[in-house]
Length: 255
Image 1 (spheres, rainbow, N blue to C red):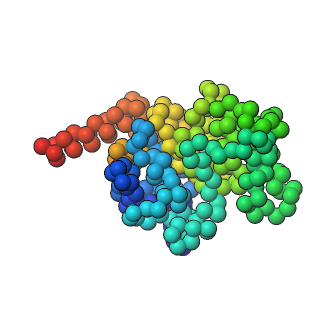
Image 2: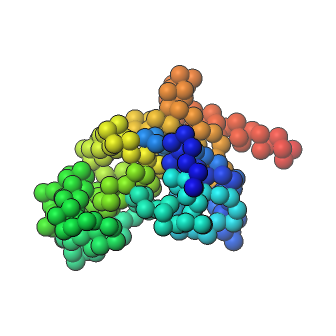
Image 3: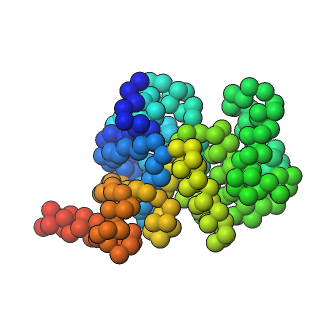
């Protein structure tokens, strides 16, 4: 195990390509404790593939991935012990209540007793604003409520690293603002680390303190949000500039 400078997640030269040639290639990034890092890119740019590879859902072609200093190939259980994830749409039991969905997931975590487990479930529901709906069946939930429940599942084990794939999908304005405040508070108070993908620049600008631009399977740039906004009017302008420069470079290479 090698966990230097409070590095929570280290990805080096990640490559995962599918038969159609799509995927990610040569992704390298480091995420430190307490960071909220946004992975910004259009649909199909490789965000989900990168996240699935980081948590072991994809068998990678090349590269190294370490979480809390543990290599996911050598010690997957230790690497993932304090990681919470929501990738794509949440997997829910529609005939079970919100509380029962979390209770079903809780059996995979090492709670010392039932009381601690119950507190963790109630805390996760409260964090996402579903405590009033804990007895309602997931099948009756709107898309936004299902997304909140998926986020609650990711937060249930009180993880030190949370990986969220487009977490505000389906949320109304109040839901977006609420989840944003939860993430910021967890980062500031608990030093919880977040890696969050998204394709809406304005939302990631409000939420993240660092941003990585991914396009066509490649990580084009990674900067602090402070640095981005010192040099560009908005994150959207930064994204368009970075992608435009990459396209120009590719055109010159082809010519």
